[in-house]
Each structure stands twice: as C-alpha cells, then as structure tokens.
Length: 88
Image (tube, rainbow, N blue to C red; front, side, top):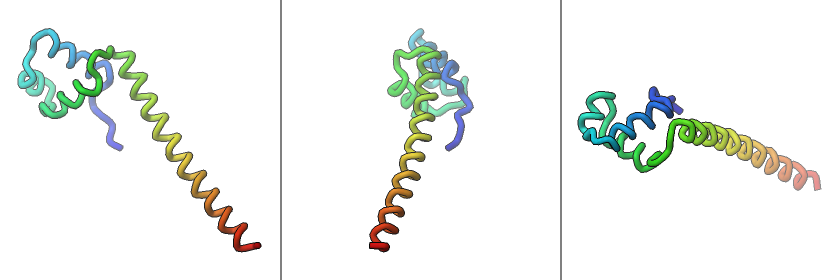
C-alpha cells in the first residue's frame, strides 16, 4: 500500500483551511491534490483534529495486520484439518 505524502496533521490543516473560507480549487492548486481527493478526505475525516487522524491511521494499520494474521491462521487451521481427515 502506498504511503500518503500528507501526514494526518497536514490533512487536518487542509480541511480547516476549507472551513475558514478557502475554495476547493484554490486548496487543490496550493497542495497539488485533486478535488476528488479533497472530498474523500472531507467525507472521511470531517471534524477530526490532527491527533484523532493520526490515531485513526494507526488503528487502520493495526487492523490490516490483524486481518493478515487471521488469514494466515485460518489457512493453517484449514490445512491441519485436511491432514487430520486424511489420517483417519
């Protein structure tokens, strides 16, 4: 997964600029992002500050790791079941 070049604090700052009256086009031009990226951030992170965004990102990364661990364990469990069935 590609890492964003914008930190959670930077995203929060960009969203606050919109709330203070800057237009989406101007923000997009200033930071080199597309308007669709801005609107995705806005729908996902609206009302959060930098600390909350950072915590959310950490939780998302932890969730990805846990899903990978579960998939690996489920596969190992399935293989063990098949081996046991063959022995019986």
